[in-house]
Structure formats: C-alpha cells, structure tokens
Length: 171
Image (cartoon, rainbow, N blue to C red; front, side, top):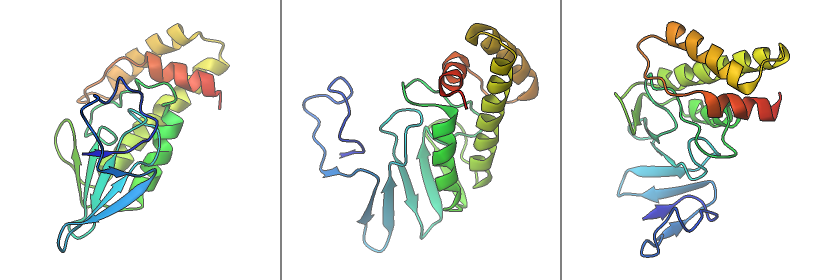
C-alpha cells in the first residue's frame, strides 16, 4: 500500500493498513523496465490524491483529479478550483497520450485542459457573482443553471462547495 500524505486523519486509514512507502510529493518505482512516477501535487478532490505517470507508455492514471466530462468534486476543506487548477497545470507538463480516470471513460491529454477550462469557468463565474454582491447560495443556484445549459453531456454535481471555496479565497 502507498500513502501519499503523512497528515491523513485516523478516520481515513484503518488501523490495519500500513504504508510501505511514504512520500510528500513524488516518488518513482522501477517495475522492471517500466517506471511508475507517483505524485501528490496538491489538494484537489482530497488532500491525499495521488496520480501515477508511466512515461514509457505516456499514460497518466489520474484518479479523481482528471475525469472525462465529469464535474470535479470538491469535498475537502482546503480544496478549491484554484488549488485544483495548479495541480492540472503540473499534470499538463507531462503531456500524456492517455489519461485513465477513476470514473468515466479514458481520454487523452486534452482531458486535462478540458477539466482546467471547466474549473477556470467555475472560478471566473463565481468571482463575477461575488463582485455583484450575490450570496454563496444565490451564486450556486445561478452557476448550477448556467452550467447545466453550457456543459451538456457532462455529469454535473452540486456546485455549492466549489462556489464557497472561491468566495473564501476571494481572488
């Protein structure tokens, strides 16, 4: 088992689960001619999200960080579109040919840009509504309606936590 973060709370990992490898940001494992680069690049879906890149095959196993037309879920305190976008910027530098998400269909490297565009759109729209004096609840309702029209074909979920995170960051 590999654990990405040393500060996971005890309720996340059961007491009978012990990590063989601990790392803060990156770790590489030689699998006999194939290298798996394990990465924990920042807070996204959870503070322990881990991505795996196999350069020999140009494959990114993105977990919950990059999905294919599935709106990002921001359930963790500290997660925000801003922090998620920063991680996506790092993943884009890998230029993967194949992206394998935890949920949904696999995609190519454009999946990263597609998810980033969605988050930038969410961030930009929430900031605009905040500047208009809208409450988090009002902004969430507006964004929900607008994004359901704009992102047809996507699996969308509630936007409240994401809007709240953007409002809290204020930038």
